Amino acid sequence: MKTQLILAAALLVSTTVSAQSNSYFSKDNKIESKLCVLSANEGFTAARKVAAQHGVFLSRFSSSILCNGEDIRDIAKKETANKVTKAKVEVFAKDAQQETQLCLTALKQGLAPVRQKLGNVDSLKCNGQTVTEFVKRYQNAAI
Image (tube, rainbow, N blue to C red; front, side, top):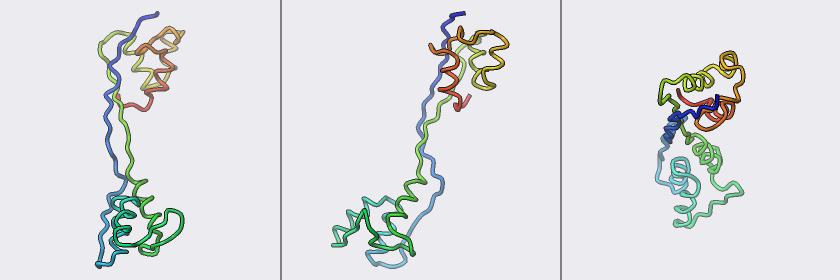
């Protein structure tokens, strides 16, 4: 069964997911406070640029300013880690052929039900790939 299966697979949508949406602000007008806020909201590099304009040196390698008892570099790292970019893939059937439905079954339930139906899963092609490669590639996709 060497049927070439066409699945319209990949509605690739990049979305930005924020784990926490913290908003930092300064209680006073000190440059150090402003740098802490800038580091948390826009990153350490932005804070270094503004610091240089005010004659303050921020080191990438050693502690220089503490923000609420925490190193300014650590605050920037935490906020950068909270902003994660993920790609979402949606898989859907382009037609109602049996092979197409078997490919979707393999994604949803694994290869065992497909093996029971076909016997030899290597004969099934999904988007030009063997069904095993297809499942490995799209197993976490939205169906």
